[in-house]
Picture (tube, rainbow, N blue to C red):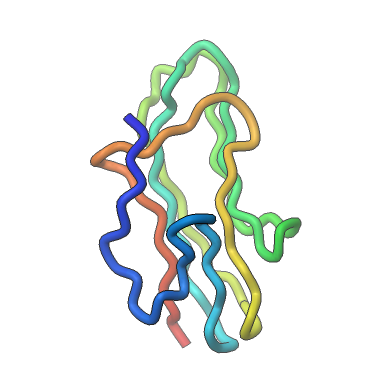
Length: 107
């Protein structure tokens, strides 16, 4: 499964086509990831990047891992106009009905 469904996009700051979130105001943002390792045969890695290069959070699966779903979260300090994007950096990571990524302004 590889679903991309947006449940909430208040203000339209997540671009549904590119998957890039753009911070509307400066402050602290909570980032959450919950994903599925689609193939247990290889090393897999999912990274959330700030402004295309600064790693904010990384989720990794070892080769032949028996773990299917996992998640993580962090708080990032963003300036207005900073962007966040998730990328599969290695292996195969998918989103199914149990998985998500979210960004929330917390102050």
